[in-house]
Image 1 (tube, rainbow, N blue to C red):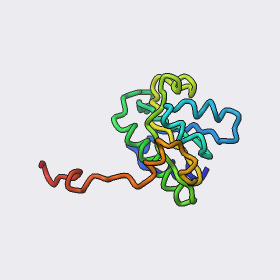
Image 2: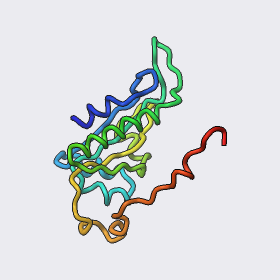
Image 3: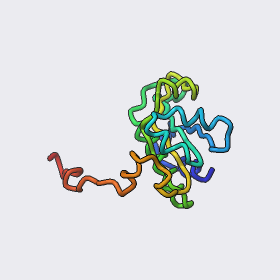
Image 4: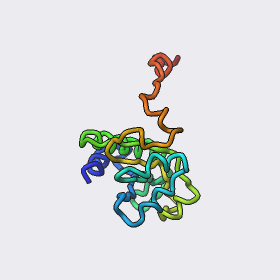
Length: 158
């Protein structure tokens, strides 16, 4: 719950907080069904985690009975996911954020409304030895390459 509390502290446009989370713990009876909402490649990452979280954003802003599209719902929800993953790390857990979700299965299974978008899934748990991973995932257990600052920033109009 502390991770969700941290997510709730993220900034959002007009402080609307368009996110919500649906989660399952490995000990829950629906664990396998929850994990099977991921694409097969990500099932290999997530099936041994302690928790699996789906981050969902509301694509519209409803204020004073008026509904309008939200231009920042994905960004705002991403900020909340970032806070969640930072808090997980502060608690000694590791997280793996995944965009690879089987949306055709996940949308009805999670009961998403027409104005909701499934953004990402997050597996959370204790870091384990890569020896337990399938061979195709073991090789990726190293720090990811990052783009250089020169390729991601521009001063002025560039």
